[in-house]
Image 1 (cartoon, chains in turn yellow, cyan):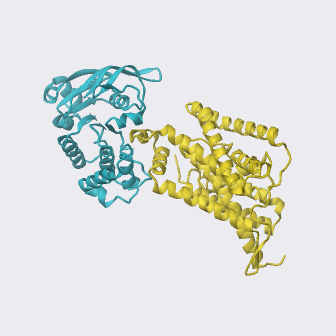
Image 2 (tube, chains in turn green, red):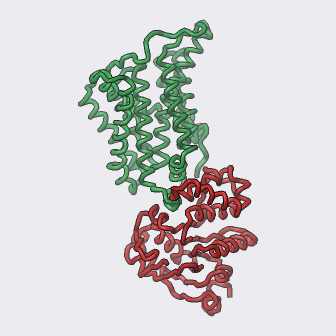
Length: 292
Length: 234
């Protein structure tokens, strides 16, 4: 195979786009984990819900894409809040294992509901970002990769500003670090839990909607996206916000480079090989801190 | 100001507090002294609602506050500086203070209070941009106290502020407590370091196995034989 610089750049651009989506999903895992000390295996299904709802609003109800995007994300945020109130809150006092199994049960339930409502077929999401490739200095780029990267990065930036610049964001971090002491400051920690569930469901939905025009929309798309997001979070260092972003982009790039230079059928395998290697060599991830 | 009547607390099935009666009057420094596991920390946690009270009543400024959510208790004017400082290690010193004033909605006022506290604790001023986890033990204790004061409390609960500090710093912490009290904040202090505590406190309660076994004027308590033997090293 001949090496072309243009090919590599194209691979990197699309890798960053996919990586941004993984980062959003990974952030969802991280935020829920930091607040509720819980790995939510239904995180990927929030992506699926975002994608199918956006499709319904956009195609079936003929709403403008931006409106569909917002409505779908808000719907998933509300679903996330309900899940936190109805399932996570009562289970809080039980062992971690019970909670994790509950999230797996939740994922199966959501998928089953999705199957009943939207069917098992893969649905095509209209190319909302345009189909005409853009040519910049001899490099051909599909416009949706640029849009996905841009929108994803905006969300990441807003999230970063929220956690570092606002009192509520700082209060959420404080609650994650030391729950009892946060309550002593007058922070309503229950409210912070709900907020964490809402943000992380919303991030999942955004990831799902952004990925929809690239891949097909399916009711079981959540399992693969969830695993990719989880891998990214572990890769970057579970519980670390910058780690999730770095992990997501690293995974997106690694996948795309291997798809470009080895074979696209090994793309998913690469994610899991990376996960296994990380768990063996550096279980705390790239930016994770050693605990215990 | 604060009144505990027959307060019971359970840890699982074990009774940690067995009917505590305690009263604090405005402007006092009251010490709660006892050995490890006597229920000192539990008493403070019961006051600030970190653990539920199973029986009995807690009143603050004439209103019942038993088992209110912890964040509401703070709003009523009680700040609790927990055992082991518990600063938010991964937030900056300035942000720790900011969150101490979480219940205060007036931003300008909050900023003024923070500036005043930073002036009072120059070591914190120097390190306000640093992560709280990088501070030394003494600095963290000062930060924890300053953070507690950010909410403009009427009553300050201090849990073992001298724990793990060098003697010189212990002295500094107690001086600070005295000064805070002189400026109008009532203080309930829990300590194992009975010697120094009885010197600054107006009154004291001695706690043993979840019960108050002795109470009274600090000087009186310090002169009692059994107290000398058990808590003052002879």
